[in-house]
Image (tube, rainbow, N blue to C red; front, top):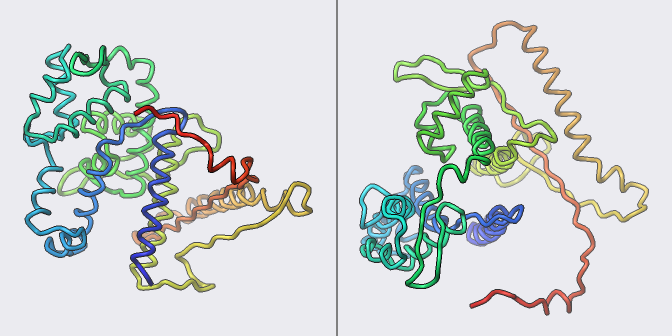
Length: 342
């Protein structure tokens, strides 16, 4: 297996995926922290797999001293210890509003000025702070909580689905794991967990080291108005987990009797093709079959009485898309102009 070429291709596709998520529905999700977070998470994951820091530094093409400095820089603001630049800048604007951009840059002189300016820009685009004016005369003010009242219910639902997904996939787990894997703060996690416990979607189990949280199901019904973020994450995790489980077993070839793996087919049809409807109906057919199987399994489990301590969870995922014929000619595609202003 040529891992280098595969990694490059996966990174490229992942960037496309992130870019689409960041612009879905016309929104512009802030990305200033993404590159930094990728470095922090990747180094942490490599370390958890037993890779030594010197080897990790070499994998990034860094001297060991440079690697240590980079980790420290990205872990927290150099101006305000214990906080990321993102958190520190937002807190500073909250406490000193209205505040000039120059005052923010001067306050965080210990951090890279371009990073601080980028954080200000992303906080503005995300709606967390407001800007009036331009250049050194710009003034920043934090958005009021009331400005987000209309979105509070929607955010709460998103948080609930993310915490619910974590309790289902990672449970039984403690509250710290729920916070870490759902990427939510303590207050947001606690609020979501309280709702999930109250309506029975998540249950708490006693443990010598404290409560553990788990769920026997996670579902976002077809056509549901809420929960698409968690549904996308669940599908993505299932895909990635299947691949790394296969690789972790030292297997790179598929066999007909495999229980772990995946397959991809491309079915070329056209409007009016005798099998067009059958090809495009595969996803619907698979959903119906799996839903029916899950109902039968639930019924059989209920009639069997007490479940054994040792259980297996079979995770099945399916995805489908139809690539329409390109609407642009090659010449039109290559002459499209960029309208960005410098």
